[in-house]
Image (cartoon, rainbow, N blue to C red):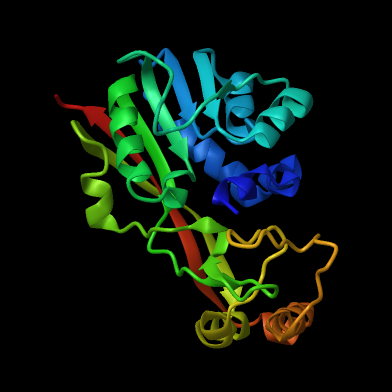
Length: 263
């Protein structure tokens, strides 16, 4: 099985997953980073198109979006009225300097090497003046453990971590001009301890995961919950009790960076 099949899972592109207060705030903060003199934008890895939908409703520009997943493009068309271009971020089907701004939201953390380096080069090639990147920052990464074959793989297919030094030189030929932090998520202490101990050692299996080796998913007909999922259910139950929701600490945040062409 290829990780490509993961991104064809319909539940990933459910529009409701991207309309939470945190996601709405993130999209708005990315939009606020677009320079006032920009007249066109290409969103690479546009997903279900919800970011572009918000831009359509708030600012007049020439927009386009590129997305590899057939399922995501279908949702964008059927539910949001947006037609996305089919294509890969490592081989963008647009000419050099085709857009004033190229944006990439929650995409680069999923890319394996050398796709990652090709995507960075393509962003620099297609962007006339600016690049905006949104990725997890100093993320605590954990792994799913497939209950069918035992394969361990990164949660949500996040295969790389981003720190300040990474962001400084991310886009070749561009200089970092502005940095904003957003989507700071807190978690109860009990949940944090669980993630740092049991989950990091044994792994679990989130509801939208798909094993890249055997293709197992939570909706698979032969699925049978095992011990690695049991603790997830216990913690989920405890979260409903007010006592175990306190104290809470910052756990996850994202960074938004604006780059400007310097050569």
